[in-house]
Image 1 (spheres, one colour):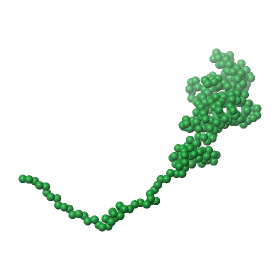
Image 2 (cartoon, rainbow, N blue to C red):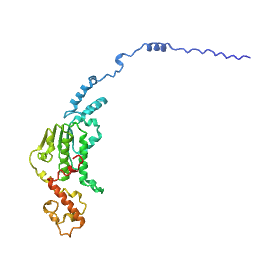
Image 3 (cartoon, helix red, strand yellow):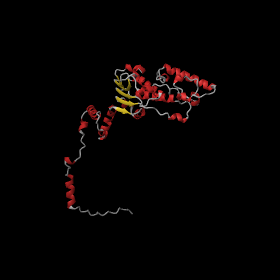
Image 4 (cartoon, one colour):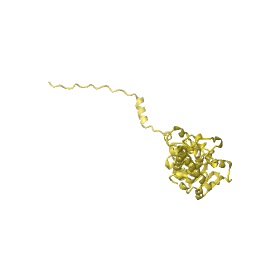
Amino acid sequence: MTLRPRAVPDLPKAKVPAESTNLAASSSSWSCPAEAIPILATPPIFRIPAELRLDFYALALLVDDSDLRLLQTCKQINMEARPILYQRPLTLTSQAQFFELVQRSDPVDLLRIHDVTLHLTDISLSSLLDGFAGITAWALYQQELERLDRAFRTISGLRRLVLRPPAVNHSQLLRGMYLSFLGLIPQHHPSLQNLVIEDNKDLLNKVPSLRDLPNVHFTITTDSTPDRKQTCSRSPTVKVEVEENEEDLLADPTLPEDSGLVDRKAKTKKPAKSPKQARWYASLRHKYDQVSQDDGGEEMIERTLPYH
């Protein structure tokens, strides 16, 4: 017996309305007009060479009343014009702000910095209260000076520097850090075109290497000021490393009265010095002689630095 497949009956064809047939025919021949198609045209500023665009950015950003919202126009303008910001004159209110700028900036962008106004400030001595062995105020000022030195090495393209000394300058160590920093400027920026120091002109006698720069200007031309006389006092020079009871040691009647290290009112009769007091007094006398020879001790920090 042979099995044969059953024949499948033909299904009736669905009738397509005449309206749909006419619609399909008309849609195949329909075309969108050219003016209805959106075209992403290139902005006119991007049709000019990139070198000319950089000149336009500089003209727009390197002026006093520039509008930085230009950088928010589009991503490409932001990328192209952002390096121009580093060519603007920078005003830094402290060396801490300067350190932050160096840390968060690309080294290539730091080379674009040409004009800086830096206001030096005193450092924080709060770490002396932490009780770490071996840390002294002297070491803290030396570390700050070394950080300044490293930071200024990163802006080798500097052309103009306006330097403002600390507003309150009654610490001899702060004075030493300030003068030592001035001595580092001719070493790392010999081609500095313009240096403006908002200080007394007699700094040339303290830092002779400033004469090697082509243009050095001082905003104070008098020979001496009341503030400068106070900063040249020797009294705060050695007290930073006192480990004994200052009241007992500094009240020693054998200290010279003209040394500036003893308060005459604090003098009281004390017993003979112990061996520990004698060693401390000998060290104090040696430091006082160094201060006298160095005319106030302004360069005491400089002698401890490895690059001096």
